[in-house]
Image 1 (cartoon, rainbow, N blue to C red):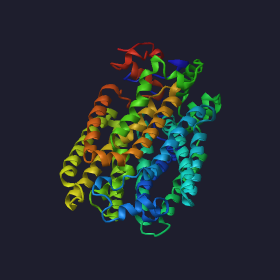
Image 2: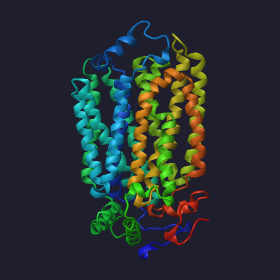
Image 3: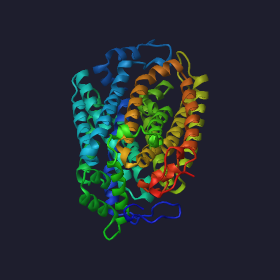
Image 4: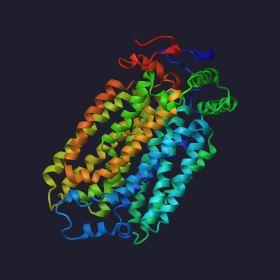
Length: 510
């Protein structure tokens, strides 16, 4: 026990006091998690704005003429295949990747709170620039600022939540971040549904309202305290202890937990090289693999492109413009339901069960959609209404299953599993790679839809089998494990134990 630290519970893990919920920890974590609103709002708003005639007329007039012509394309899968239009969506994620890498380099020096504040401020500025865009160049400048804001907030927020939440409630608190993403996505689609009826400037209102969640995040980041681990990393031990006491509650004994934080940070300081070099070490191999595998598999579920382009996808299978936007709203409600259910289940039943159930349901939905779309959607025709409704139902089922599993756990597990010495590098790598893959998929999806046709559902279904098997075999169960004791879990894992040795507890893998 470092520094006279914690007692061990029945699972061999530290049993800290202060596991009960307090008003400060709830308020602090909810303010931080509100950063998810900007993620969700932009994901939802981009696809809907791309459907608006006034937006296309101003920035992409050639595409508007092509889609409105009587025989613009004989293949319904290829009607919306425009690299210029997809660049509007995908450019944000390229800049988001850059923002994440920059944030990862400076967060140890300025703290996680400052990174979240900077991210919200850049997103706020980008929203205002986009709303006032007079030409394509101005639109891209706004997207650049939005992307940098996403990168900063995505790098800092999940780690901040993992560091602040009590171990027994950590899953629920971290899942608040994807919950706010889902809420932002729903709000964006409701906004699109309303502004689509406003001629000429409706798209400006949709893009400009992104300033609202950005302002919420800026206000939240300005009011919260930095995490104890981040403060200790910068030598502010007294402030760190005060911050920990504040969120755990007055009168709660925090000596054991604070001693373990100090020990973890001291271990970090004994390593001279930077965190990005450190994560390449053999003993950190599991964390590097997870930092790469999680964003890769997240994008190969197919949900990213479904979220971006759901209005276009629904129009492709036969819905009108308004019906397509309303379908996206329903999709948002299913996302919220899945995340809420996941938040309650993951701390009770564990993370791996969610992976198994979600993977099986997503696979079933993708295969079923391929079997419906394949025979009933062809050249020069749109799908009959009954089949189109079936596709909507299956898409909603897929979305809820994703939110229940990978949607919530992508932010939970990477945010909680990294040791402090590689925490910034691990989270930064995962978020940067995710945004980079978002860029690739957003740029390529409509071309893939044109090329693969209904086979695109089979493509993602095959990957779902692979990622579910990976999660069951290689992702350790982290339910209820204190943040600074994750090495103990990896040391006991059947495979990762050959890389991780549990020096903290004085034993090796079993």
